[in-house]
Length: 186
Image (cartoon, rainbow, N blue to C red; front, side, top):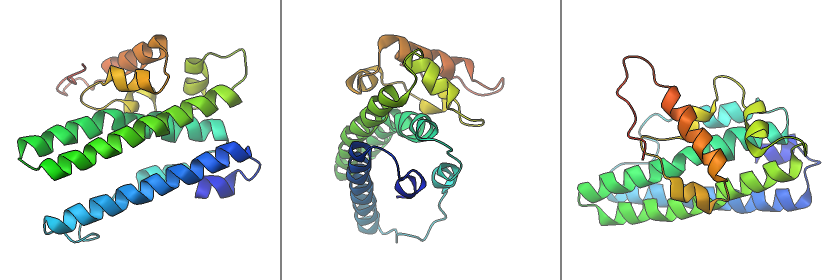
């Protein structure tokens, strides 16, 4: 909701899309809360990390927001939702796995929304990748848009070009600290 207040002159269609995404995020929270309760975990009993939302306060433009939140943080969920779906399946928890599948489908739409608006608002002379990179601010970087796996097909479903997808893959592959186990990319 902060983005709607921070950028009151954003196009009406963008604002409407943001309202739909906020409704999705609220639904995700309800689903996670209900599923956690069934597993005996009370919502709020564990510490949370609100880094993403604190970071949102620093966006100076809609393009900063689009690069940072939908294309990086939600982009990472294109991988994480599949990873968590598999963890739940391995643990025999079909319902939690199904919840992850629902979130995954929504994340594709959220990233597609971000990409659509990046294309609408960026200067014409910039490629999607150039606009994306120019609006990332340290420590947020392209490598953070990738989980431990790399779901190329989900990224295609968002409308990303193969060039954009390849650059994300390359960014993640080259961003490994020297003593860290390499990511299982693809």
